[in-house]
Image (cartoon, protein in one colour):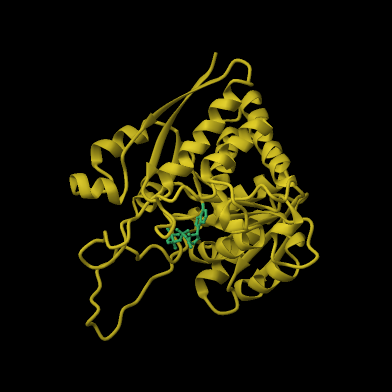
Length: 348
Ligand code: ATP
């Protein structure tokens, strides 16, 4: 009987609350699946861990996490707990880079027409693929001085880095509606013209997939005007960072946006949102993004039973959301974090 070990990193702020609901749903699904089990081991990582040990991601903890191919993460960061130069502690980004998790998959699905701020839209169902190891994030750890006359960031695209993430996007599209949209700024930036030329080469390997190329600024417009036209989108790290928040807003906000950061050996599943310090400790965070991240995790484990489990979770969320009153406060409802988790479990 296959057992899937999962490293669990609840983190800071609302992270532990939403992860608890994700695990509650995982256990409820496990009880319904045949012949698969999940064993979880929790690790302390994040700004809270820094306050305890002086390191948000102690090397020994990272080594133990890296022994797991499957990682479920909550959120990281506490306001004012920062490095001396003012930058936020971001062990979740460190993990992404150390484990080479290049494919940032962010599925965006509208579960009820009332939850989109765009009038008249009933179907929104696309997946944003964000390159997650290079792009404009490469200089994030560069030293800098606020007193300098200038500070420069670098945007790096490597051929290998672009090829692997673009290929992932095409493979994902092959399982969906068979369309990939490249989002770039090829009319202005040399790196983006390069990214586009690599996209064109990879596209030739997938003749059954249709393609579209849009500039990132136009993409922001189209996401609001015609979100239903997108299937899979692939883009650079920072563009993906920004567009994934816009995309989340289309389907009810950050509490509805799951994510998977996938590499060749490991994958991290986490809600797209951060630690939401403004609502931490209040018991009102929306756990659905985490619950849907658990569904993505079950897809990725790629066993017929875990895949069935992923579909069961999405169907349960859909069932809960059919009742317009079943919402947490970020979406205009009154359900607490645990009450929403309980509703999803009941719907299973
Ligand atoms: P990061 O930089 O890590 O993305 P952030 O501080 O920019 O984090 P979030 O923590 O994602 O942003 O929070 C942005 C806003 O969305 C906040 O007002 C927060 O309360 C709200 N929010 C985020 N996640 C949730 C959630 N699961 N449920 C309810 N509200 C949320």
